[in-house]
Every structure is written in structure tokens, then in C-alpha cells.
Image 1: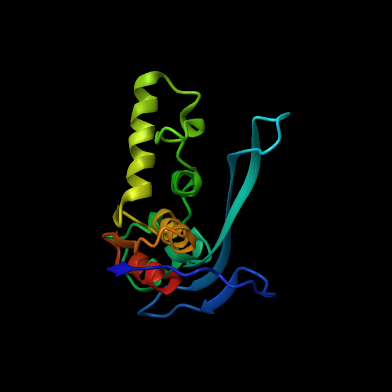
Image 2 (image 1 turned 60 degrees about the vertical axis):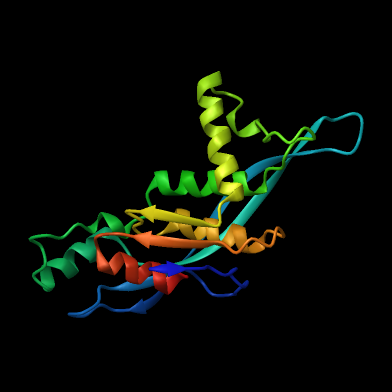
Length: 191
């Protein structure tokens, strides 16, 4: 499944918002507003400060199960417990960290000598800094990514939303892959 994500318009709705109560063919679903916030460092124009931290936030509307218990109950109701894995139905901390890293990477600039901004890797040893720099460069220059075991697709959707707001005129796409078809249903509904 390949998709491109769009920016979320501001809404006055309270979240999570129920979408589907659940039935035999589809688990219960809600739409939830997930803020992904991180800090980026930008060069300041004045001579008294070398850098300035700014907060960068993107809001994603995710379609997801309301909670793990509801998903387990749905698996039991539909008798799909033999091969069920409801772990796709939650937002994993690692996915949130990867989404934040993606936002930082796509919004960090290049230095005057053409090298990558090293603020994201400043606390690592030299070998790990090189790996992080390569990852940042790849995220900034690639036109297509694949998210394996995407679950709710938080990292890939944040890449697509960040790329859509960039002014570099690079058409970027994301391919989401997961063994659970309901996870892919949620990702497509979120895109």
C-alpha cells in the first residue's frame, strides 16, 4: 500500500472521536489527534546568541482501536484469537521517537560547507554520529521510504506530512507494510 499524507486542518472536535463501534468485519475504531512535538535548533541572527531552540509540532489524525482491551475483546468475539496480534493497535514509544527524529531531520538545515547539522547527534560517539548523519542525509534526499511492521504508521505518516510541508519540490511517498490487514486499514484511513 502506497500513500501520501496531507496536513491536518485545525478542528474544534474533542478527541478521540468514535468512528465505528466494531462488528464482525471491523474492530472498533476511533479517530485521534496525535501531536508530534520536538525541538529544532536554528541559527540566530543576533551576535549574542549562537543558536535558538524552536518547538516544531505536527498534528496527525490517526484512525486506531480505542484501546488494547477493546481490540482483544473484538478478537475474542470474532474468534480470531489463534493468530491474532493486537500489538499493532497502540502507539509505540519507538514509533513516536522515530517520528520526532524524522521531523527534526527534515527540518534541520545544511551547514555552510554542505555538511549536515550535527545537533541531532551531538551526544554520541564519532562512529554513531556518522550513522546518524547518514540517516539524516537519507531522509532529506530520498523520495520514497518503506515502513516495515508499520502498525498504525505513525513514523511513515510523519515523514509524509513533514515532506508535504517542505518547499524542496520533492514528491515523497511512503509504502506501509504490516502482516495485520486491520493495521493497514487504519493507516490508509489515516492518510
